Length: 252
Ligand code: SF4
Image 1 (cartoon, rainbow, N blue to C red):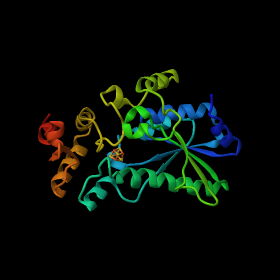
Image 2 (image 1 turned 60 degrees about the horizontal axis):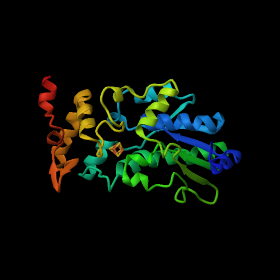
Image 3 (image 1 turned 180 degrees about the vertical axis):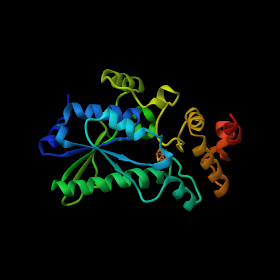
Image 4 (image 1 turned 30 degrees about the vertical axis):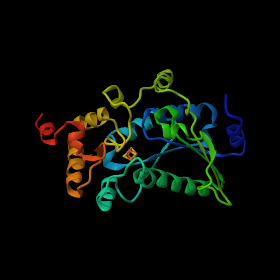
């Protein structure tokens, strides 16, 4: 059953922007949103991360949605941003998310609302409490003060906030869909191929599937003298962290 507050926003003509990364949670979130929100009030948007995202992810999104896909992106690139700053982002300072995803998506929402001559937006995200302690503390439905102003009201909504990973996969299967191929091939989560918060398993799988991109990350670490990860308080190179040497990988 739909939340009464969401129903009120539907009745007021709000536009629901489904922020789709191509991952399983976005896929399930979109399916959930599509059950309740009239199709002409849904807009799908993907923040393109360029070479650092999985090849084919945008085609995957198109294959599992019934709406046009709006692709947005920042002027800068992930690796360019790291090189310029001389540091990798961290869980505490996620410049990558704010500058490469959130910023372009909200810019798109502002412009799209204006073009439609309407004023209420609901930013729909596939965030779930189970993913981390920090995410569990989030409010799944809240007024976004920072993005709202005198002529615009923006809400954040996490429609699958309480679902477990198992429920997400099950719900995707019940919708007659498959998640992106990298999951069945070994990935636990899907984001940038090499995420600053990625598990060793996902980094290893990313390296095996994308050796050229892996080399770029390894070489950038060397160039800027800063590593993506630490072991305790000490820096640890990506190659040591994954146990995969780029030279060995390319010889295989
Ligand atoms: S997936 Fe990871 S590395 Fe990529 S933008 Fe998000 S937090 Fe940053």
